[in-house]
Amino acid sequence: MNTEVEKSPNFLTTINIVYLLYLVGLLLPVTGLIGVVVAYVNRDRTSDDWTQSHYRFQIRTFWIGALWLAIGLALATIMIGYVIVLFWAVWLIIRAVKGIKFSNLKQPLPDEASWMFG
Image 1 (tube, rainbow, N blue to C red):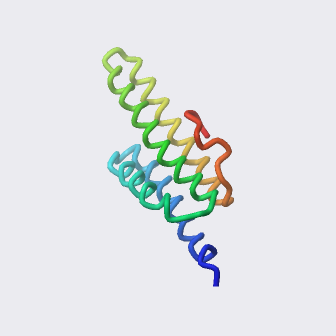
Image 2: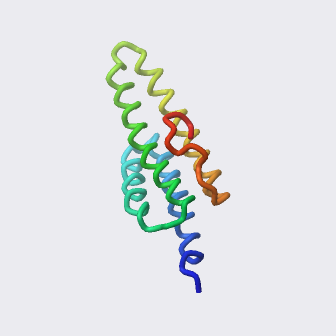
């Protein structure tokens, strides 16, 4: 029996859980941190290109998002920060939805290294 075939549904579930944790992270920030930990733990457990693509995308989503959020919060005193935080929230939603879409198709993301929407 092929172990890669057996593991694939578990990775699909884990990948989607990380995206959902990021979405919940908009309301409960600790879940975003849990999501990136799960992505780091699982990224080396698979040899499939499409799953590794998603884990790299998720890790980049967390760190790039943390940067956007930090900049937005730092600039909140001069009002432009609120626009940046709003952009971050929309950006995160788009990246997570796009990630879920491609993971359900079992396809790698077209541009996992993108700073925008992948």
